[in-house]
Image (cartoon, rainbow, N blue to C red; front, side, top):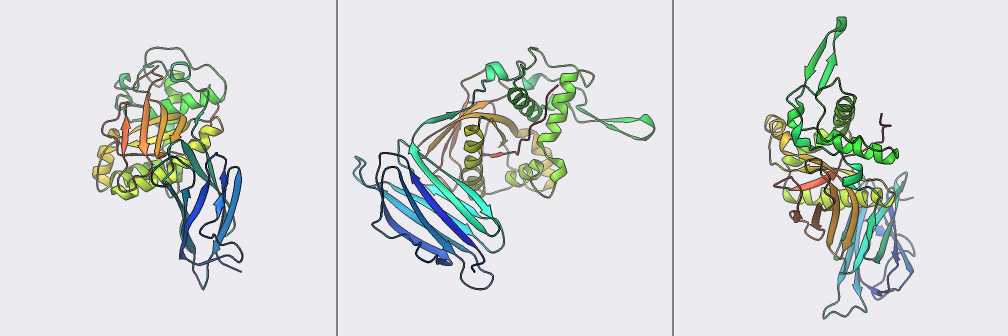
Length: 351
């Protein structure tokens, strides 16, 4: 029995015919009777299945398959490539590049023990959207207008409290998380047009709690967003591109397809070392993506940015084929913008 395996199912739900033009392994072997063959057709509404597995002691498996477009009116066939890498130790990674114009493609993984099944879906380009709208469901005051007061109080022995943080530095994570909370709870967000004054205001206290939730400080060795901010500020271009395109985009699309806006951490600074990183944290930002559209390599996200309230026209665009350094354009408040990641939002019932 193989120590690691990956089974891939390609769903072609377009009117484009694809041809398998190549398949290669970087580790392991093709599973018995489940190898792709050059020249195989992946027709409209077709399901094409293949699999690879490890071969040897303490080994993993990985490879790629390339599909060329058989009937698109272009001079040269478009090459769509799906890659996978499942090492014996470490995370499994996937990649999808060369998506033809007019096409949307994504992948979704299911893991059972040491075996992974991946579904790659190819459909005509379309906008996938929640019913969230910044002008309706976002806060109606700007994150840039918080007063110069503590944003948290730590309870000490003998009834004492210690004020920490400064709201005037911004509470974008709390505004993002709480806006999603109200939306998912189907509760109207408070209509106030000015920022609350201090922690005695219930809205202030709730947004503050959600700000600290957005950093996932209790998961310091797991999915802590704080660790990710520090790590990504110091990361190189390929690391940022991999995290944005291969890791974040499939999760973002999946959340939005289920009707849940995706909370994003935006990296707006370069920093090395913990001291420099902590000092630069305020140059980063948090927003919510509430619609997704992919047309070939270009992915566009509709964004709620708490720095720019009530604006339904904010977007981030990324070229999902540029894996050396993320290629981003946008009209949101963060400048520069190097990359983004999904912060791991979890619902909390709002007041």
